[in-house]
Length: 391
Image (cartoon, rainbow, N blue to C red; front, side, top):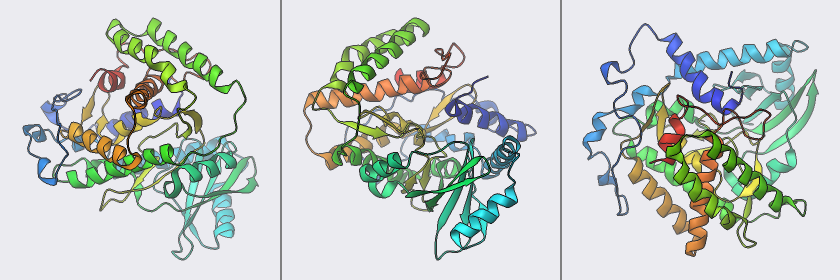
């Protein structure tokens, strides 16, 4: 069984979704049309009138996305699983503790996590959430994330323990998780809202380039990380099919660019999944990025693959890109470089190498490569790698 929560979120959500609506067809005979990357190419700066002029818009990929009620089913399941694992506490006890912390009655948030239970204060005067977690958070890392990414990261403070779980009070992030908004934002006619999402994602990543926070690392950290990355590429070269080898060789040759003394090491969010990106459902703007538990110090660019999350949707056998995904990418990069200013070709190349490496690391294994017994994915599980790394 795939145990990594990243794989779980992408595949199990799809399985649950299909299981609860197998009485109806989602798309019908068009179920596999449009699979993989579209070939449209855009070279000029995108303008509002540029969107929606492609015949590819006949392919409404929003119909592949989970409905809000499917997310609700998943959240209910996750809450039940959390309390099944932690029999020393109850849902009522958590709600009572959270109400004491916030000074207000609380309700479960619409989107839950695999290893936590989260509630939000019902009162508008003090918008806070309280989260009960399997494991402790590194508060220093979260404070560093706030220094780096500023308004995108909610504040978080430890509030002790309840039974065997850790308790944290956090700022309430407005809007909804992208997992609930995806079906809406990917719909035909709403390209301007998705454009805003992409624009804010560019601002988010640019923050890490601009706000260089001094990060405490052991003297040999960079050398050890380079060796680890090289080992990851070696594993993938041995385990992935031949069609991936040219791209892996390209990343391997460019890897030293990420470890130059003047290239930034930054705090990277390691799980930029649809449930961790919150958006305004009306404007499409990103209101916050949550769940920094697995954040890692790594070369800039290695988390840029998170952009793919908002540009398409995965089914059990295919990744479907938004018909205007190339235009949206163009806008992302133009916004990013407008914010950070001129960069030499070596830095631009390093950013692309980091992006590709991050995609291979994230989608090339059956679990995070840092976990025990991680293995390269096999034929049948290459949907994301093919869509993201061979386009």
